[in-house]
Image (cartoon, rainbow, N blue to C red; front, side, top):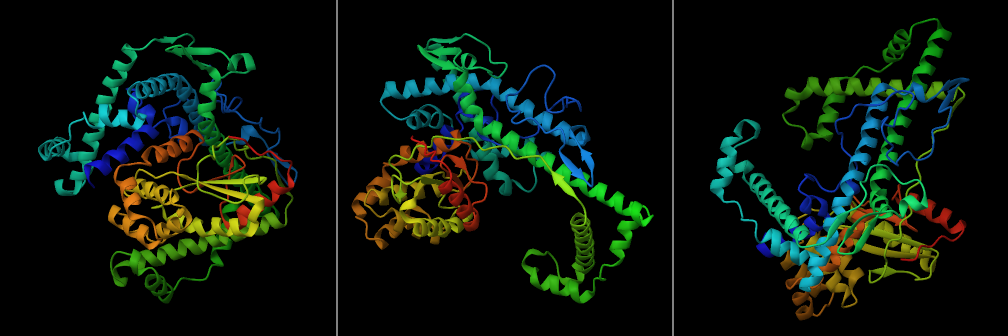
Length: 522
């Protein structure tokens, strides 16, 4: 990858993770856009299981029902959640509390960067490139070797295997150090005042309107903080709901097993063993068939792997038998569950100056954040095309760019698609990109422009001088602000779509067509 391409890619990444770049204490990408990882925590009590004693997180969502599930009249309630679920949920909520404390500094730095870019008459990406990327010295091979030697015990493989990762690590470390110094310089030259510490979530409109800080006379309110945290809060609610649901399902199955064992006057262990005994024995022929069908993913020949394969197949058959038992018991029982999933946040996603199909006044707007190097996006592309064709003027389809950091050519591919759109050939060009995901280098992008009949002089110039870089970066930033963490991510009338299959989209669209109009205006 050339330096220009690397700078474009890094600037997009750094802007998208502004918290990490301009806040010295933020070691990872901004937590406000990502599903939280496990932090240290003191856990929670059964009575107040998802809420630390000292403060709330503002992510509680709907109160839990008194009865979470009922199995043949036996009730399951919140105190029945396992200690592990209570502990993990408490950790997730603690992450929201910590993110809220950091968010004020993140927004201060964001405003400082925007102000500096405006003063210079350039984009924020250009400021990042000039002050961080360009001024962070590129690691040498000798420095990478020294790092490898000093940390050899913790690094797998030889130096030649680890070199690229070490260089990337050292480069990012230097960029962070440079970003920290740049942040300090921006703050020193600005009027920054912190008025109120960020501690607890607002509970009233007056609380949301409270000014927490000013940056050169611009207010940052509690509402600004909470709006930025909405994706994280929803992720916490969604992850907590999944854990709770799985725990309840286990409790239901355990109760059904106990009841069936009592009815049969045996222990639950004996009941399970009885089901497992019914499993058909795994033969060598079964193992050979499995090996032949999965040979590309198995290391070693059949003789070396036979016993492992046979054990795997035995375990699989046992699991199928136990699942069948659970389904049979559920079918004969009265089982009710009352836990409901959290409602996705409603976002006003900008649709101006974007690739669009359908009627601009349609009741339904489907927004897709996509990456041309993403295999899942290539699979989703014909589904979106089919939806657009079948619903015609009843649905408007809008595409936003979200090139992922791990996809080397995705950024330039997105810029190329915008260059094609400037000549009225976006959809033809986008389809060609999805058909050729393994060949998205710049020379290939230019070749595809010829295939769809574009003016190569205009196209090549736009791609070479980064004419649409800022446009793509704007999409990435807005995507992160509404909780996009991967691709494809779709929003139907401002709410994230959980099932992006053809059937899932049709179901969501039909429900939305029958619902009262709630079309969002950007």
